[in-house]
Image (cartoon, rainbow, N blue to C red; front, side):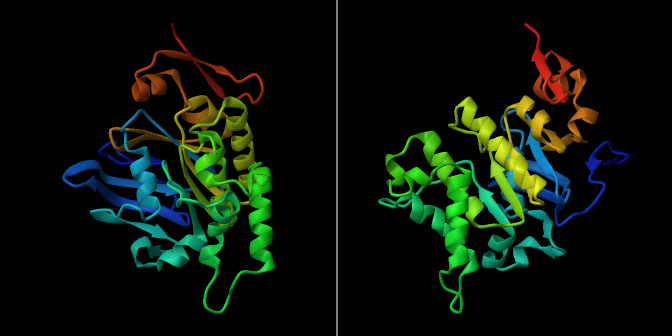
Length: 270
């Protein structure tokens, strides 16, 4: 990480996926301006920050759901907007903050949609597709739900099904916006462990999380945002301090070592 004379933070590297001086807007409302972020290859990157700070907006730009009004997002040396959508879907898997399934679709059919980017006129459904779907459902523990209608499931079950669909894409980069939403604490840890395992196998993971302690325990690279800008980035053990938590979240806290992982554990002051 490097800091420019103006005090803004610029990424120290430019991996497969990075944003160069992007301005992100919704209509006339500017969320981020001249924002540069590099996603380290092979890292488990977690983006944290208070509500409405630009976390999800940045993830939408990295996934091409939001086109920057200035600057550009680069994937594998090319501007993301210039890469065909199907090719982007072979390289980037995205779990957005909210998803809507078609009426009457079963779990197995929804998860199978993750394989569409790999199919074409000359490549139809194959045993490899079937194996990917089965593996994704097993990893997210939704195999027993395969014949159920998605709209009949609980919020937590639906979330795991959507994650299974993203895993079935088998992309080298996964982008997840608040993936623990609707999950109880046991399933949250189960999911975070799964993402850590995928990262250990070589996948680049980028997740927006609200839980700072989850972020500190699992991230290998942490990006802290506020007011549409990156305030700090690096390994959690290197950047998470009481001052940072106060600056980013306005929360007085003490930092102690996590008794399980020795990573920073944030304890709010009463």
